Length: 82
Image 1: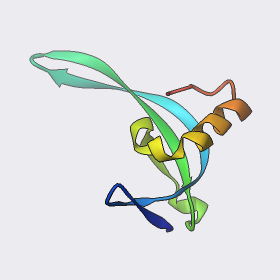
Image 2: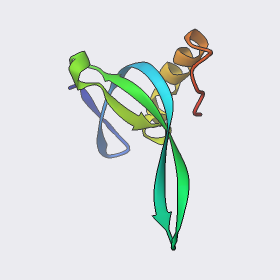
Image 3: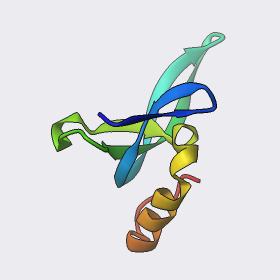
Image 4: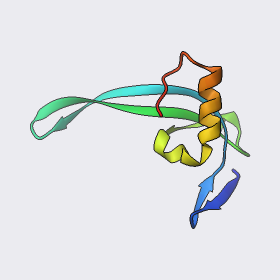
């Protein structure tokens, strides 16, 4: 996995955004059940095989904004999470 230092932290480098989804799940909060939604991107990491792709929230991809924008230009029907 290729990593680079960004703002003093070691971060993995995004090679490509594969897809986006909004995951819904239920959570019990203060005595009631709520449906929560979590927007996620499926990410291909530079230097890793496709077997190592992972889901990542949009806020973890702020250093890959150009790749996210390119993904949405090429895939206008996928959920835009930004």
